[in-house]
Amino acid sequence: MNDRPDLAQVQEHVVGFLGKLRQQPSSLHVQAGDITVDITWPADVPRPGHHAADGLAIDAISPNGHARDGHAGHESTHAEPREYLTSPAVGVFYHAKEPGAEPFVSVGSAVEPGQQVGIVEAMKLMLPVEADRAGIVIDVLKANGAPVEYDEPLFALTSAED
Amino acid sequence: MFGKVLIANRGEIAIRIARACRELGIKTVAVYSTEDRDSAIRGYADEAVHIGPGPAKRSYLNMAAIIEAARQTRADAIHPGYGFLSEDPDFAEVCQANDMVFIGPPAEVISQLGEKSAARMVMAGTGLPVLPGSRHPMRSPEEACVIADETGFPVIIKAVAGGGGRGMRVVYDRRDFLRDYRSTAAEARALFGDSRVYLERYLPSARHVEVQVLGDAHGNAIHLGLRDCSVQRRHQKLVEESPAPSLPADIARRMGEDAVAGAKACGYVGAGTFEFLLDPDNDYFFIEANCRIQVEHPVTEMVTGIDLVQEQLKIAAGHRLGLRQQDVASRGAALECRINMENPDRSFAPCPGRIDSLALPAGPFVRVDTHGYAGYRMPAIYDSLLAKVITWAPTRDDAIARMERALSEFEISGPGISTTARFLGRVLAAEEFRAARHDTGLVPRLLGTSAAGRPAAA
Image 1 (cartoon, each protein chain N blue to C red):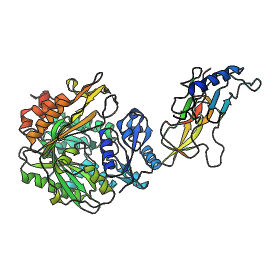
Image 2 (cartoon, each protein chain N blue to C red):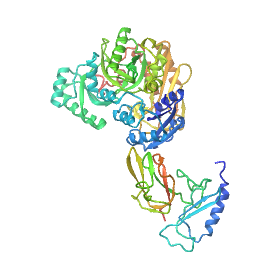
Image 3 (cartoon, rainbow over the protein chains, first blue to last red):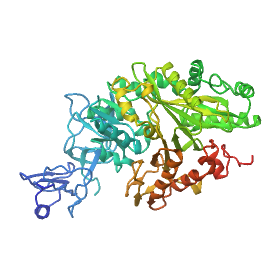
Image 4 (cartoon, rainbow over the protein chains, first blue to last red):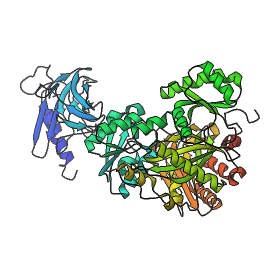
């Protein structure tokens, strides 16, 4: 918290930046430390030029670029909160069906409700992690093989609304 | 000794266990459900893992979630507390299979004693007195009728898998027997997933007296004296005390010796309780054994100076008992009052909710075990126990006076909140309680109902 850049200042820049875009991105990820800006455009929307799309979501603006626990976006006046797909159980989280296989989803993937997005292993039982909502994956919050708790955010999604 | 212990429980007992761990230099891991995300243990423990949503089946009874939490945090042992998984032999086995120590007796011992009808027969075989009744779970309503007639009415029908005062019914009249037999079996199936029931003679006037035992993995066992838990409402204890008052010393000694013999006979390891009923002639009968730390364990701690949770941890770590029977001495008298979030004016209906302000008793020789704090929202889906107030004094009369003083200091406020504190004051003031002439009918008499929920005149 102490090393957080001045929030108001960052917010002002982000709002100014968004104003210059012809169309809104589905998500904008800003890291203020060494200045990183990630923009995600909805896959199914044509991209006029290199800046365009419908929908808007600003991720939480924090020094490490990782927002957690649904606090994301609350500080931004224009933003919708990002949404999360969370773990159904305590266990070990896997991105793919088996070691070396393609991950179920990655940043930019569109997900539908009921679609499998990962696996949580609890006592040798492989529990599928299924999306409970539609959206575009904008962040993978847990590494492959990471221990996770119940209800812990695994993926950040854009809001499916609009 | 263990480096880290996971506490698979909630409420006051989770904090009680964490305190013993901290005193022994053991790190603790709390587990919590979504409902308990603001619970005090989350802040007290060194680590905390969110294991599931509110319903216990998916959190505190979810073995996979608890084992995974222990694995992630590299805990060496799991303390189950009371209730939840504490007396589940499968859980004890699962812990072992995952190289974690279950802090409790071995799975086989829990199985044997958990089957209450079988436990009765094992103890009868060891020479402990048991009440007349069935020798095995009843196989048919017809057989049950024959056994009930042989036993003599009134009888009590009990679930083989029962516990926590649930799944039992008293039958006074043989004409009601078949109906009550069927409803108890149905209730047992609903509550415990096991419809088997057995029966015993019912003692209309009895005291509930239990013996605290400790056994180690090297074949040693001792007892830490008796507790009287006769102040009950619908088989739920409200006030407990140690020693058992106005009990002749030779009877108390024999009960203690019998409990130790029973513990040794079944290979008991850890802290456990042997429960007895005591009739007005001071004849006593074994009814069941509990394979866990009990809610009322503090009264024993207060009179013996022995920390039972620390003993559980040492025994589970393989230590020999550091005490011999002759080292155990009971001094003075201790009482425990359970303050539940219940409304005595509305037949003790639970009244959970947000606590706006809370003043807890303190001062000389007063102990309070609680997870409550001002601002805490007591969940509706768990036990209504909020605090245990324990007092000690050189004599029983002084311990009662001290308890009255302690309860007078207890204050709570919040929307819709009510507790049993004032009702407990009525119990303490009752003449038969003061004189230690009370039995399990005391609370029903105070409430104007009989023990079985009938009008007192019946």
